[in-house]
Amino acid sequence: SIAPVSSALSMQYESLSVQEIIQQLFDRKNMMVDLDPASGKYLTASCIMRGKVSTHDVEEQLYKIREKNPDAFVPWIPNNMQLAVCDIPPKGLNLSGTFIGNSTSIMDLFQRVNSQFLSMFKRKAFLHLYTEEGMEESEFSEATADLIDLVNEYRQYDKASPEVDDEQPDQEGELLTEVHEDSLAHSPTNQV
Image 1 (cartoon, rainbow, N blue to C red):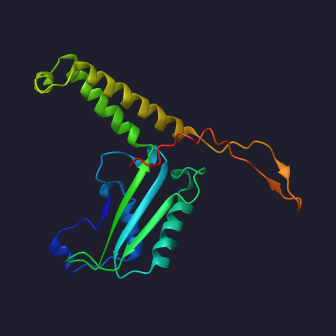
Image 2 (cartoon, rainbow, N blue to C red):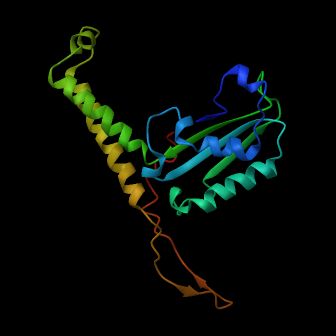
Image 3 (cartoon, one colour):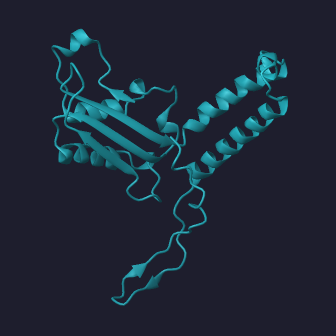
């Protein structure tokens, strides 16, 4: 998502605070993809701010968002939100933000695209345009299978939670908990 999303004329009269920019970044209306972020969980996220802004202020607002919506983020990836600040604002603005999130809610979009593709593929619509260029029909079937695997993987991570193994007291008598590594081994955290 990006913020602010408004006309150049209105920006002459409007100056948004860090809090307002962060709220807009997490607002569904500002997202560049038609999906409901509330239907999934963020695996990782990156917030990029441009303009004269205090890193502390931005981190504080991101912390408030995370505390207000704990179910929106997976608990088993620590420090899964990154922040970058560039003190040079974009032309015509004092402050702007960009948010890039890897959310399990993207599986809804993938399922929608796959469904639309399959309805066209059954009728072999536009298929000749690709086969004439050297592609084979089987490549489309493989791509569909890969997309279904990706959806299933996101579904797995959407439902995943930290599993507590053995609780053993350490030297000072505190309890230590271990998280199962196997549920995290194939996390799609590098995909955005």
